[in-house]
Each structure stands twice: as C-alpha cells, then as structure tokens.
Length: 400
Image (cartoon, rainbow, N blue to C red):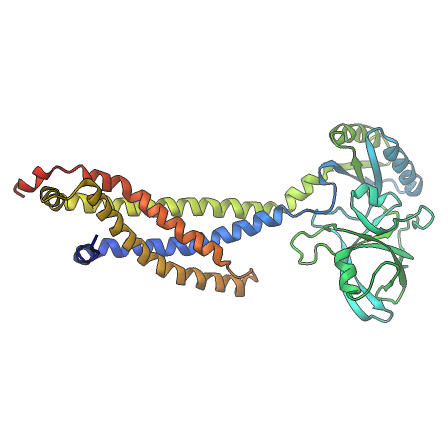
C-alpha cells in the first residue's frame, strides 16, 4: 500500500493528528519513567532482609516504677521467653530492625579514627541474638553468655567483640579476611570481629548502607526494654498471645506494644508501596486516555470519509485494504508521537537521575514502551477500521 495518499489525507486534516501525536509523546515519556520507578520500588520492597521476617515479633515494655528491678526482670523475661514452647530464641534489643529507628556509629581499622572507615547500624543483643534474628552466620561464631555486658544505664565503654555483616566487613577490610581483625570506635577502643553474617538489613531501609549492621554483645535496657522473639514457623501468633498474657502481669511496668516484624517492615515500606500504587494508577489512566484519543480520531476519520471509502470499495478495494489503510494511518501518527516521546522520555529520565539521584532510565523500558504504544494504537484503531470496511460501495453513488 502506498503511504503517499495517506500522508496527503493527514496533511489536509492535521490538527487532530498533531494533537494525538503530542498526547502519545507525553504518554510515552511519563509511562516509561513511571514504570521504571515502579519496578525499582517493587525490587526494593522485595529485597531479602537476611532476617526471619515472617516468624519474629517484638515486645516493647516501659518501666514506670522508680525501684523497678531492671536486671532481674530482664533475666526472668528472657528465661521465660526462651523457654516457651515454639520459641527458637529471644533476646533483648536496643532497636528494632526494619523499623526506621535505631543507632549508628563509625568503625575504623586503626585507632585514632584512622585507616578505613565505615558507618554501621549497631544492635545490642544477648548470646541468643543471632538465633533470635534468624541471620545466617557464614564464618566465625556468635557471642558467649560470659562476654555479654550486663544492663547499665550509662555505659560508654566499647565492647570486646562484634559480629558484623559482609557488607560493612568488606568496606573495612577489602583486601583481607575480616574474621579475627580488630575494629575501633571513635575513642580508639578495640573490638575483635568474631563472626561474619551473610546479610542483614538494619533499621533504615532507605539508607544506601542498609546492610551495614554490627551486633554488640550487650543486654539492652533500661526504662524502655524491647524483646525480639523468633518463633518456629506457624507458631508466631500463638506465642505472641501467650507472651503478652504473661509479661503484662509484671508489676511496675506496662506493655507498650506486641507487634510482628512484618508490621514494622510494612510501615517502613509504606511510602514506597504508596508511590508504586499511585504511579501504577497514573500509567493505566494515561494509556487508557491515549487509547481513547486514538480511537476517537480513527472514528472521526471514518465518519468524515464515508463517501471516500464507498468510492474505493466501488472501484475494487477489498475490506482488508480499508482496514489496512486506517491501521497504517494510525501507525504513522503513533510513530510520530513515539519519536518525540523517546526524546522526551530520555530527557525526563536524565532530569530525574540528576535531581533525585535515581538510576538512569534503562533503555529496555523505553523499547518496551514503544512497542506497547504501537500495540495499543493498533488495537484502538482496529474497531473503527473494521467499521469502515463494512461501508457499502453504494454509498459512493449517494449525493452529499
């Protein structure tokens, strides 16, 4: 089929075609970049945390009595929780992983804040900490009960041993095995690395070093005490109820909350999930509006060329030729919009990467968007084109 007569027809009635092409260009630019952001958010939410998320819950307590026996209470609570049927392990903890709240410090490979430096999100746990978190220890060992420091309201001393993730260990010791090496705090106090964890996400899921986690052997306290409990698969909810009924009976304190680790994870990812849902709605609406615009233009062209279609049918054009004519016409309009949309999409992607520190737009998304809009355009035109193909040749003989 010759494209020249189709172009001539478009140039005679170019306003509608230009508006639809501009709409397609804007749709492609927004849809491609939005889809890319959506996929980034989905990948972020689906990252493995290294923790046994599904089977962990956290008990948060608050002591209000001035003479509350902190040390004895923690010992009794941990003994009770670790002895509960269905519990793998329990530990006191100074902060809740994945919750958005925690503590961090800098670690050095030489005293005096010298050598390699890396920030780390640290958690104070007991000897059952690694089992309670459900993390995978790939080398070394955990803490012994003898090394765990007792509760203390003011304790500025560094710990003698630490267990850290691969992520921070490689930053501190990129060229040698970190196990057995010594790290230092800001005051130059040393601690030996006795274990390496494969992966563990800390408190701040938006932090670019979310995997920089260090465990300290300390019994966390004092007025507010949190217990992190890992249950066996399928036992979490039952154990939560039993633990809550027991711990709430302790005089001199209140239970602030008993929540699953999944709850904190969901809350921390709420903004990312909300953005993904919002942008998904935007993408669907834009594609639908673009399809309606193409459909409307094709319908208008069919109605305004009824006599022309009848004439073509009268001189021998088949129905397939009529359908092909309108599909090619739409393809030309869509392609014009897509060319402008590609340029605009790359420009928007560059702007997002420079102003919001997002990764550059992956060209696979652009290619997918191009083919997707071509398909949407052809499908939106198919119904009006088939309606045009049903125009009778007798229409050509009617007066206008």
